[in-house]
Image (cartoon, rainbow, N blue to C red):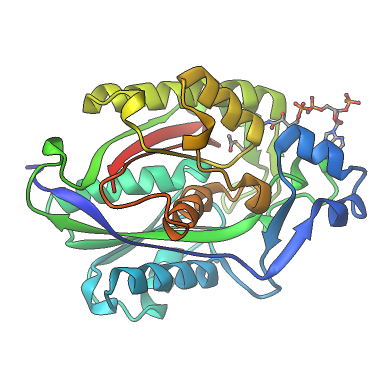
Length: 325
Ligand code: ACO
């Protein structure tokens, strides 16, 4: 039986040191800073160092979240890593992260929903915690998209970056319905028919190779605005809140134009939207926890605030979480 609630007790992030600017990219492919900024709002992104793996980013973000929570490895009994760029085909990156952080109890697994991975992982962790399957979950979004980009394709390689972010969720008694802190509601959706608009052209059982990201950008854009709006409206309807009740809107950071179009359509004022796409690019499953971490660190998101996340990505997958922080 679902009882209790999952409360955010820590939030952390990690970015690789190397910055790749639009000017750097203009030396690699036929593009310009003006084109990239105008079409996407992106100015720079981080790129993992040679030999720096998704698990390294995830461990650093997970460690930061544990420190913020004042917890140690012995307190965590679930590690979830949302990623589309695992270190290996198997084992799960989450199992490597569990070992590296010295977590010796509980379960660990990866969750693959591409850019929606973190939103999915929060929904899954919340239901596991409320079902008594775990007490405290480390929920991480971590990606090294630089490894699956076709660096000769100017239409895609300019849009993505590497990074990781993490939350610690803790099972507590009581109900969120009464204004208590915790995950209020989640909404998770997919429609596998639209795979050809956004995918990676490789994999263990198809080509035996990792492959490269392929995207029909204009079509993805169109679906993104519709699906994100649906996710936000549904999660609000499920929880009984209205758009005006939201303190902070923390969207998946795919493209400034998608963020602006969705916020406009939903009637969310720009000052309530947390935006990091200019300096992170699209970091897929890492983008929401990276943005959450920025807004917690700079003091915007405070305990008790109603925070709305959303994402949309390959699959297609999409979804949203409403969290009383
Ligand atoms: N530099 C210069 N020119 C470029 C570049 C580039 N980096 N990339 C493409 N172009 C050219 C194209 O070749 C095309 O030229 P043509 O007219 O001579 O054929 C022209 O620019 C226009 O291309 P479009 O793809 O139609 O440009 P659009 O305005 O749609 O912008 C973009 C492209 C930025 C990809 C946009 O469609 C978009 O943001 N889509 C959403 C994709 C997205 O965010 N995906 C992330 C994954 S899913 C998610 O996270 C939501």
